[in-house]
Length: 118
Image (cartoon, rainbow, N blue to C red):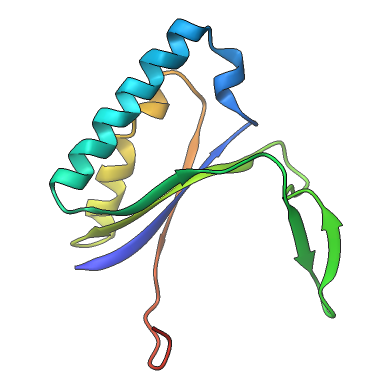
């Protein structure tokens, strides 16, 4: 088994555009998805991310407000999963119910294991 990070990218906080009923339905769908991943032993961790933050970048680590790059997309959450291979991780990502109501991107990145780091 291999570990992967799935980074959820949307155009900001997509829940703000949903009615309270739609928000509740979304939370229930995501809860079912997460519950299935937990039950199968696939999920190691998952959390939404707040919209604020900071960026440290470039030589010398220059600081700037906001976690945002030049696009409208922002990472709004993550899933840390285990899967047999990249194809399996892709199938797990494709099953995420966020695609039912949002133009989202899920970036799938294998976690590189290096000797001496955890």
